[in-house]
Figure (cartoon, rainbow, N blue to C red):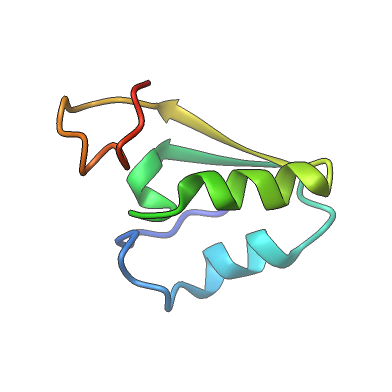
Length: 74
């Protein structure tokens, strides 16, 4: 298990970046969608899916704000 506290707006998160680039990691578990990235979450999902990998979100929706939810209804 890897734990890293950081904002989805910050792209300087070495532990998270290592998980994203390690092909032996099949599932990346996030507490909330915005912990991975604030924008473009679907792009990350698709790229990982092409590699047979996935992002799994424990709490997919914790607000009704479309901007926070990346404009996606979950």
